[in-house]
Length: 457
Image 1 (cartoon, rainbow, N blue to C red):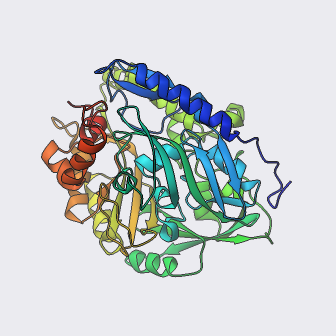
Image 2: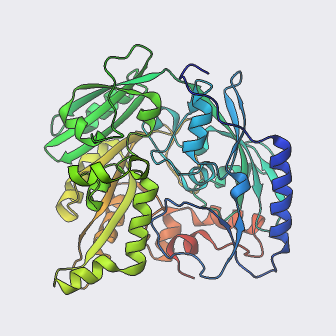
């Protein structure tokens, strides 16, 4: 039993991990040249439904979902690449530790967050998940296994792995930094006057807060939440039952959560998106089992709807306009945030939106997601549907991409991508990517980044 009062789940012996690696490498090398390969995962947090090669050999990753070791002295963990943050957090909290950045959805995997980026309310201090990686074992497209570090033989791959979306190889083992935790988090929900948002975010990120994020309900109703570790909580709230966390931002000025519940405060209701599936209706919520009120369940429901086109067919029968999904996360320089929100609410009109400040952890920059060192950005997350523009079913998503480019921002690639190829490579450093691809995948065994995130060849 530990400082947070939970038993440590079992870890994976290093010998067992090494044997699993040898087996996976042998399977990978046995796949004939020219045949596509994918590492099979039980869950996904991508919103590019149907993207990727239709015919691909799927290799089982079940043996790579655990934690190998937690070292409380060095505050590091050795983790298998397909371990979910839900499992990783259970293991590290038992030692009174947590990853520096814990993405907000339970089934995001560590390898996925490193190769595909991730973010949360510690990102204003600790950057993105890949910035807490010390070393990785990467299975290259040709079948070789290499250990990559910031200053070793494969330092270029270490730097270029972030935002490569598994097109340069697969991380099978990662060593990451951890930080100590308290038992609880004290939350302060502060309403921000219209016109002061950028300045208040800057001030919050210069404070001693451990966590900072926010919600824009409307342009005239904005909140910033500051979180502080504490071992001396007041009355503790629970948002895993009938209560919904995002509503509390409006209703409370101070709140307390266990550190575990704080890390997963957004997962129970997929931020606020569970409302679209009825999970926030009081009657439905009472009969919807608590163990099934979680983001991966909601995503599977949405995936089924996308595959069957059920909701679209219903709209056609009811003679209602079709809906365009606008599911994106974008990073905007903090001083340009008001411009983005004004244009976004005028041209797209989704509310609420999530705000999460971030700054690179150190002076190192990352070639495939070229953010400036020492620049404070704000991630804006919005996940909904809007009526299609007649004759332009992708118009709102393209408007988002235009806005991001105009304001010097960046767009995460977990969702739909509408750039044409030249514009895409302009934003995501095509020359640097091509050098990495030539060195680590000269035979084109894996798709390139543009093909991977657009489904185009």
